Image (cartoon, rainbow, N blue to C red; front, side, top):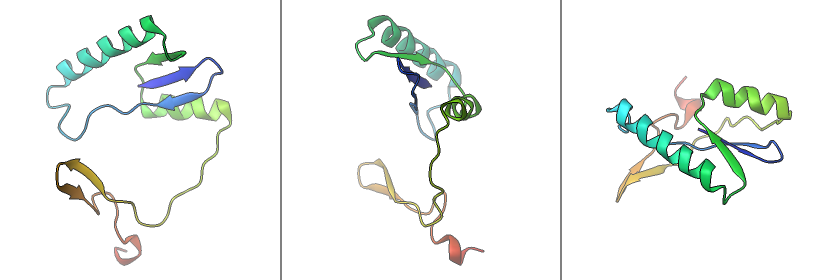
Length: 97
């Protein structure tokens, strides 16, 4: 999902996790409901749309956004209480040639 502010600044809003899309129909139905209500309420001065990574990066290109490339290790993240993950995407990439 992408949120676009009135000044045309795009923000990616990530939804779900590894297993959220086991029932993709239900997950997308709920996201569509959230988008509908968020756009109707307009308390945050943003417009929300269902999107894809390529549409988001295309929008950033139009904004001429640049960002640094991360080459070192990623940080651990928490998926459940006392359930930390490290190395899922990359950990110690220099050692994993």
